[in-house]
Amino acid sequence: MLHEFKKFALRGNVVDLAVGVIIGAAFGAIVTSLVSDIIMPLIGAVTGGLDFSNYFLPLSHKVTADTLIEAKKQGAVLAYGSFLTVTLNFIIIAFVLFLAIRAIGRFMAKEAEKTPPLTKQEVLLTEIRDLLSKHGA
Image (tube, rainbow, N blue to C red; front, side, top):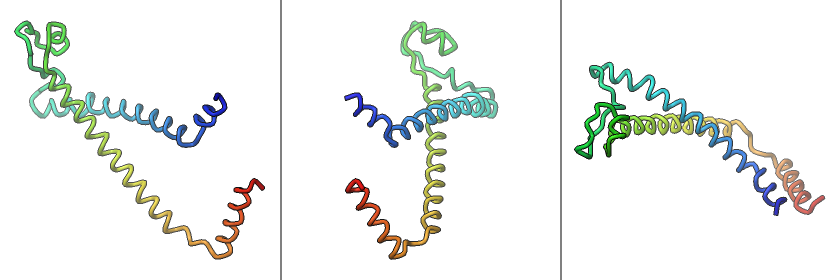
């Protein structure tokens, strides 16, 4: 069973997926910082100093605080400013991934055009190689 797990864990797809998840998490942190540290303050400056992170609606009469952190301590709040920030994070990540996938697709199409088709001899040699490897030679 350990041998099967090792074979599974070291397959290319699993390793590629792990690398993708790690890079995705790092990329998510970068985008979160971009939105919360750069974009949202700029939007706040343009709109007259609005701070979206502190926008909330109290859901209880006990909530009297002016900041979201203090309001959450007092009771239930609807933190729509945080939701707007997270939504903006998602839109930026989705757009950048769209651009990356589109660029990769175009690159792959160009590479496919560059490779000439196999000659009859190359096709025959490829078939022979595949048959030999299939039969364990």
